[in-house]
Image (cartoon, rainbow, N blue to C red):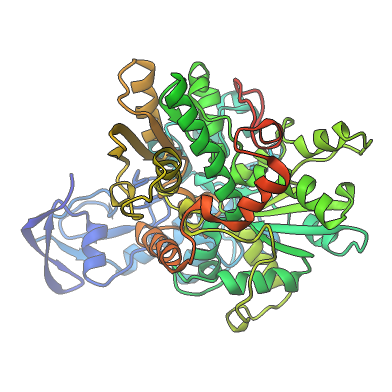
Length: 591
């Protein structure tokens, strides 16, 4: 039951009288009273299954302690949140959880950012009171995106809930009974062999280190120290609005210039921007949409920027793949262009160039290792050069990994100067910046597609109808008398609704943007731990703020993109564009 803000209920919490909305849980009521109860299984909007027992309180007249996350308040209820009985119960729960938890905090990716660790410290639990009762299971490190270590799992159920309720994937669930209870994919298979799409939302909600991204920072440090290699880096649009937060700054801090400075000090030879490739994506994707409209192609056309979403449609709706744009994501377009056009232009041996991506996304890791993502290799072989096999993108790091690297080398991030990206693959438009938010790809595409189709300036650049966090947003656009219905969806649960409409032949749209994660990339699975809608809002506002401040706000007006076409690609959807910037997707076979 949702709280009724109009109807109030009076109660007493720790001797203090207050009124709270009817339908509130005791946990919510305590928050209103300024009391933060500890909890592990509860997460607003995601999970509240009362499994952990940490949030118990004492209610006058109740025979046993009450789990506050699921118990609604009642009129005149009298609650004690920190009585000796309550505190002893909470300590016992933590001691029981720690009995089967490994003692490797120093080596754990979540050290210093672990909810179990924090609650144990809060409750004064500093030793193991009970012996271990479970044999430690082997970690699942088979996939490129997400690692799973069930020895650190406390069975809170948050990951199960976010995978099932938000993403509608249900790749993991509770298995077994009693002491053999565990969270696992079907038949205890590795995540990489399940229907997991590597979106990483489970890593954001896991309170311990049971689910984490595959950390590649040590490998990147190693190549940065090799003088024979040229290591270039690209940064996704959403990173500039979240990296500061991961380094202790306020949520939504816009750190574009400081980020560029930090990457240079880490040792990258060239600091580029994925926004350049986002502009390139708009040129190709916008042209593809106009081509489909003019030639009676398959509609609606679905965006292809988000690799978790691509894995989702490959896994659950392979028959609808012809609706997906053939464009690669900006990450992969950048890699192909960097190792072909830029390597040739700069006189760099493509075999000794490495491309590192900084992404808000764990799915980008497996996207970079898709076997078909080697088109720069094909380019060089067609030119008669016998080069050793390489991928277009070598490493994809998350926001969290980059933040850890900055901390490791001791950079005082807040005091770094504002620096620019390198040319030419560092020049971009405001349209590329807003790729980081749900609705941003649609808005960027409209800014360019309208002018390409009509030959006239778009009356207004800000497409408010597709902004914000509503699950599915729709708009009807008029391009020189042609009506175009479009839609925007974020999270895979909402994507499923769009796909079901298409499968039933009831979709009214010509163009649909789909992003895997809540809020789009700014809510990606590689972003800072424990996100809230408030934090996502701050990040979104920062992205639109940068867009407004940009001198160029349309992808087709980016002079670096114009030069790329005139010097190298020729035209959008041309032969070389198809070779380097487009691909084909098929029924899922790997993760």
